Length: 252
Image (tube, rainbow, N blue to C red; front, top):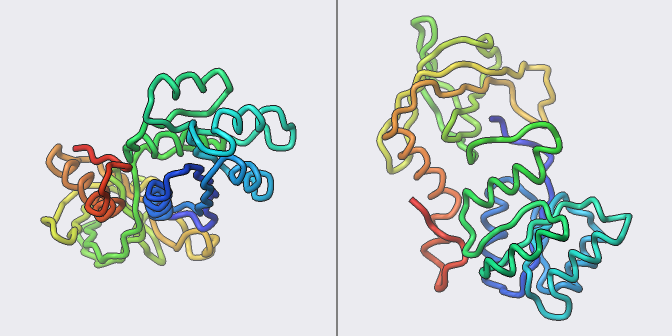
């Protein structure tokens, strides 16, 4: 649940500048470094130079279309292992790209949950771990009650499934505690949680601050809805309002 210090690189290639802008904002808020390309030739050049962790590649682009870029990448031994997610608003075009060994498919308008799923599958699963839930930075004070004592502590990140809280001397793994947090513009939410891992004072401070990851144990449907809405609003609320056409889709 802690935020990673070393951000992964995602290249987005699309000839629609508005789409590129919104995807860049969203991916940066999700914790990634973002590289943008406006056509297939530019994408190919940047992929060779920077070797990103993942490429989101539009199927139809000028100068060199996405399918041609994908075929070229798979034929070049130096970069053939880079994970590619193909994007298109046309389902037939999208699924035609599967035969070229792409890692995933992303239907336009892009849904945040679909993007998250592809990022986890293509970047993090090969590393041996994935995150089920979207997460965001959350530098807010929360109330924690443990062993009949109350502590006011600052959090570092928040997801629908749990929270990472900073503490110089974390509570032991498997500790059961109560967490109360206030979301700006939302009601205060109360959870019972379980400490699933800790980072001590002498851990790698550049990667994650000393503290503990707490998994929520008693999420009610109402609390889950409120948390999901808050996280998605943080990531894309202004994007949804700003778009003239729908590039990043909004779901319930």
